[in-house]
Image 1 (cartoon, helix red, strand yellow):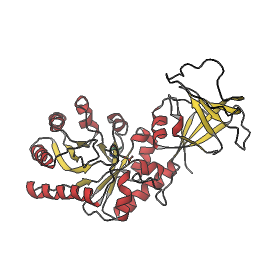
Image 2 (cartoon, helix red, strand yellow; image 1 turned 90 degrees about the horizontal axis):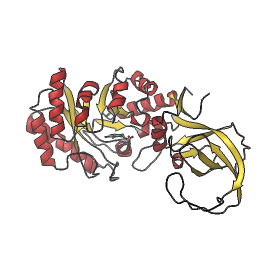
Image 3 (cartoon, helix red, strand yellow; image 1 turned 180 degrees about the horizontal axis):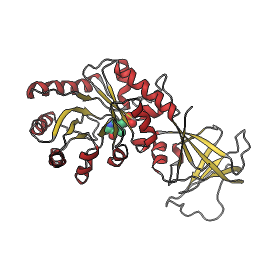
Image 4 (cartoon, helix red, strand yellow; image 1 turned 60 degrees about the horizontal axis):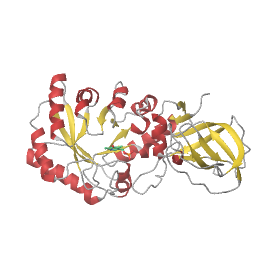
Length: 355
Ligand SMILES: *Cc1c(COP(=O)(O)O)cnc(C)c1O
C-alpha cells in the first residue's frame, strides 16, 4: 500500500449523483456535474457517465480532454482563453462566455473544424467575478452571436458566491430568467438553458420555486454533501466521497519552542512560538507541496496541527487516546480546498473503494 493516499468512495459519489439528479429533475432542473475539484478523475467521471448525467463540466480544458470518451456533453466553465480556442471547440460542446471577441474566435474555429459550438452568455449579477455587467451589452452581444456561423446560442447563466459572496435569491435569479424571456421575444428564438449557479443556489432552489431556471452546475455539494450559501449539510447526501491517509515517519517528545536564534522558516516567514512544555510530536509524510495542513481534519479529534513544510506535517498527538507509532497511518476528513490540492499533487496515490 502506497502513502500518502486519497481514498475515493465511488458508492458515495454514485449516491450523491442520483440524489441530486432525481431531486432537481422534479423541479425541471438538470444538473451539470462539476469535475474540477477532482481534476476530471476518470473513475469518478465514469460513475457520473453511468448515472446518465446530462453534462460533465470543468474549468480546465485538459480535464475535458481526459473525459472525452464519456458520453455526456461537456461544458467548459472558465471563460475560454484565446490560446485554447482550438481545444475548446474540440473537447467542449458548450462554453460559458462573456467576450464577443472570444466568441468570434470560437466561431471561426468551429467552422474550421466543421462543428457547431454552443455558447452560454454569462451575466454578472453583482458577485464581480466573470460575466457581462450591463444588461444592454448582454443584448448587443446576443444579437451579434446569433449571426455567427458555427455558434449556437443556447442560453444565459450566472455565477454567484464565488468572489463577492453574493447569495442567490428569487430576485437575482428571477432577473436572469426575465432577461432570457425578453431575449426570446426580441430575437424570436428559443433559449433552453438558464444556468442558475453553483452549489450556493441549492438552498434557495430546495426551498423556493424560481420558475425558468433549467440548469445548475454542481461540484462541491456532490462531493461534500453541503450547499455553499450557508454551508449547511443537505439531508441524505453523503459527505465521505473523499478521505486522506498519511503515514507517520517520526514520533518523539520534544519542546514546543525551538532552541537557538530564530530566523526564517522554509517559506520565508518569521515563526512565533508559545511554550506548552514538552509535547509528543508526530511527523507524517505529506507536506505543503500536496496540501495545506490547515485544510485537513484529523479523524482523531485529539490531534492538533503544529506546522509543516513542503514535505512534512508536524502534529501534536499528546492528548490522543491512541498510542501511535512510526509506521501507523493517520486518517483525515477533507475540505474542498484539500481535495483540490491533493488531487492535483502527483505524489498522492488514489485508492478507489465502494462502501
Ligand atoms: C467551479 C464552478 C462551479 C461549481 O461550483 P461548486 O461550488 O463547486 O458547486 C459552477 N460554475 C462555475 C462557473 C464554476 O467555476
